[in-house]
Length: 539
Image (cartoon, rainbow, N blue to C red):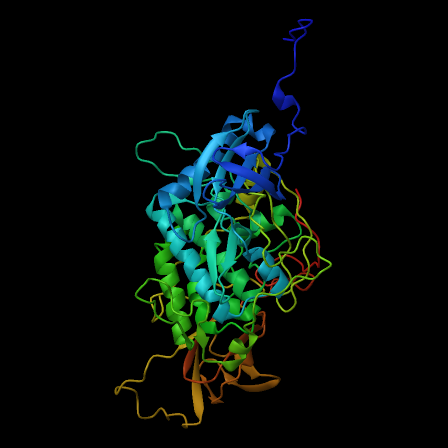
């Protein structure tokens, strides 16, 4: 009530657009505000400094409209609780929490100077394997620590990864934004986030997230698989013209083998990434540690040798995994300087923390061309709430998960194949034992033998434009170190393209999809939706 005339006054939250900025010199807790770092949909981040010891930090202040929302405040608090339960060097540190006199909540976190993984991939198109694998491994360790603490992140994506570079240009990855994390506490009967309320970003959501089902750490493994795919290939495995297209693809479309999307990625990495992208959580690796171990083992088989860790625990030459192919090493470049025309680009000494935390917002974007990643515009933000109508549509669109495939020699399931896309796993052929029939002639030393699994024996194999044999008996190819394209075709089936390096005997595991008629319009790899350039995802 007004003390002068007794009139009823509106509450503070009615003035959601009037958040008072923190002026330089304002004392918040033990820190003095210096300036604004960035602003986002949920709050503002300020650079600050401890006036006594000179420690720099960042203060994240939740907007007034969200500070008056108990659920949003609970998530804000859960983020601070989550990172302090985990306490890992690859997770941003939050070390103070409080409330401003006007009621807005804030926390104090470490000040990060560098660039988000999302922006780096946007600038570069894709990261060379030698540069990407150490970053992926660091994130895997951070996520493993979160899972060990009983915390599921629920919003793994490049935007929530920050890279801080040391004086030698070696990156340290920091996992951000636990704002929608699910804390599994055996002593609590109520969880901050709950089944039935899908939260996350559509391009990175697991099928169980899309349906609003109960999730666990395996949902993060799926999202981590998409992040890995995008960093290495420069494109996400699933795409669409609308949010509905993407959500449907996440639940019904099989992911393509990454080597069929980017010719620079060796086929050895197909299986471990596809294992993370299984629609059925039970078919994914049991832990993120096993997923990373499988990926690194595959990289080693492909000739990418990871250096061992030093006794101090810091990886020797971190960020420098030396690949056997010289072309991949040649593509490794230092952190790019942003174009002067881009006022938002990160520059040396600048701070670009991920302020626009998702907290169940939509931050999806169209997948760029793998060869030249197109510029992406801002995306519509909002709560990803899959209403009954959308869920019903998804259930009708969903087909039963495929029968569990037989494991290959490396203990990983062979990849499944999306209709109309080239998804193929190529693994080294098992060694020939002494029981092999003497009637089978051994290939010449300057050739390699290719066997085919999962395709009709009478399917024709074409090298370039020249037919070279049938899949059933297998084929011999001249030994070499350059990738070649094979096409497997048969009347009544869609042709399948396979890229291999004929440097040793291999077994090609794939399948052919029967033709079903239709317009024959080109489709994006792994989507089942017509290719459409540009555009944002919208409800």
